[in-house]
Image 1 (cartoon, rainbow, N blue to C red):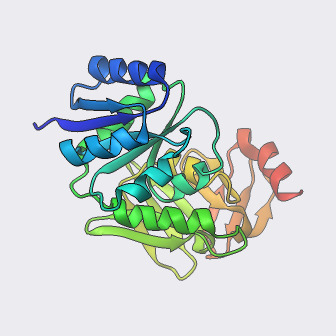
Image 2 (tube, rainbow, N blue to C red):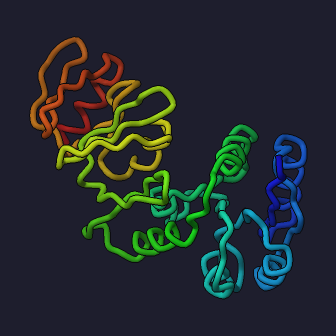
Length: 249
């Protein structure tokens, strides 16, 4: 198995050192070929080493991670954004299908990210970056889309067109308003994290619903909801109170 070549970019030396050590110890499929504290140096190193992935700090003095990518121009590597706090761009990063890690980076999160990078057959960084920029630059009132990986690329789906998402083993099934269903190799928990700011709520271990697509709620031990596509979904007893607070605001 070929090792993935990585370049780490962060203006804080301690963060660089910490990430490099964790990758070396816990992620044997990843080889760090260079590190950089300055975006200007990173651009030169990226052109020299042609990495498979870069771990890129969002906030750096003089030139942040997004501006660095603009300066770089053409790129065909995967990007994992890193941030020390809940950056304003995190929502846009989530729905654009980019990976990101919050500092201090947990070993388990790092391993899961590297595992995802290792099994990807194609790079769609350019498409994801276009989706990211569109999401970042558009007001929340405009139609936002989520990037869904498919066998031949990415499909961009309006978030408001998603009625609910159902867990199916290691897959998730997305149900759209027009009746279309999409099976995706992504866990329901990933979608829960991506869509948490867009009026979605996980009512059950196996169901994430769009709260704006509820047609009816029926009382019961946990209760049930009828969605706009007439699908009936159970609400778990432990999620009932939180659900009712959200829908009765």
